[in-house]
Length: 196
Image (cartoon, rainbow, N blue to C red; front, side, top):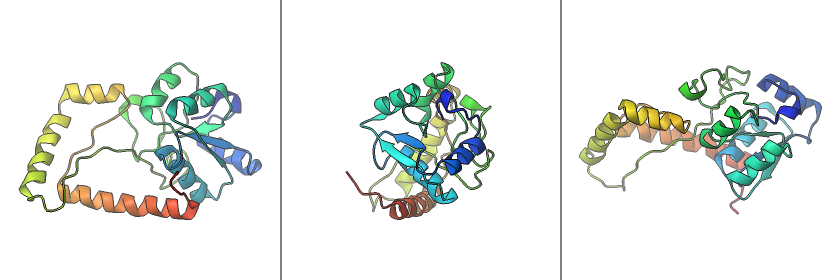
């Protein structure tokens, strides 16, 4: 999302503006190492952009400065962004998931908006300690899948800008975690991100 005063209405326009003003465009995050920070670094590395990260001490001050126009753009999570989008205090350009989502179906994905292969999903999952008998996580996955398929659960999640992905099997989730770890480890290494 961008501040309406930035004068861009698409991801392509934001990229063009960043290319025309190297080192001038800023993006906010709740602090170093957060999904918003990593999303900005992913965009920066994929497109070889010279953009400036502005870390805050939490999501509220980052959003406050986004609304005030003190930062140019922000990869905010949906729960933080939705109220501001609905109030037209910020201009949403795209979502970072691989597919469009029900809470903002009108927004293109980053890939649809001109950045192929850009995906920066935030997710929640359940993990069990190493050595847990395989039947336990398999049963948990099956039961969690049933709960996530309930219409009232889907509706509650949607109010916060979340959606329930297919629970899948523990092996599928383990494979997803391995791919995600490799991707974000590469971003952290290339951006030389250090813990605070």
